[in-house]
Length: 244
Image (cartoon, rainbow, N blue to C red; front, side, top):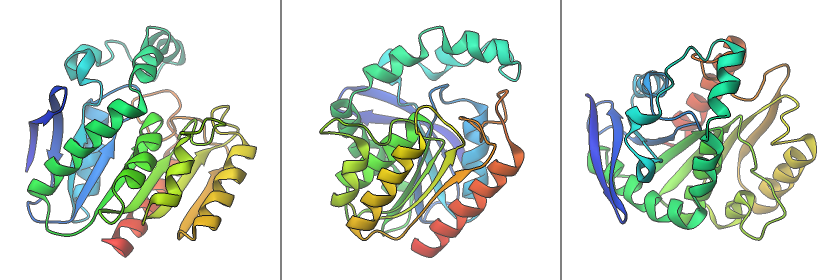
């Protein structure tokens, strides 16, 4: 099964990519800031091939259809990637507040559970999606038992609602793979995340991928790192197979 489906949320109708065999354990995949596009679909298909049903929602649905945000230039060229991100991408990211994301997460989880087998689910996220994945585990303890977060930025902040504070409320195991020298997730933040995971008693992997830049899993961009990407897939599959 590979299809684009509509998901009804509290604020409208959202597209989502659904892949995998109905009845398999469920995995919610949160996209990066570039958006729902063939690259995300390919990653979802790969995870589904391990024996999972994967739902990848278009989290910017309030702003327009997924096709409206698909890059029209080759982001494997560094200048084109920079130009794309200068075109309002981060504005969309900032408008997706935790309050809105929490309402959406309930819809994504419910939609995934309609197609997946009975039982808990996993969540994985990339870039901004890592923040959404961590928050979703805190919003849905007992349902989310596995969280992957890769080249995530802003996982640890000084704000009262910092994503890492959601870990204490969760019942999940975690696997984090951080980009090396990522300004959005400096070494001090990685250490703070480690402390939080340990204090919460959550089983976890929390590692920096040496030499890998922010966005390293995205093969349609100039920052793609094949070695780091394969490492992330290995860590994610180990996590999902152990928990689901």
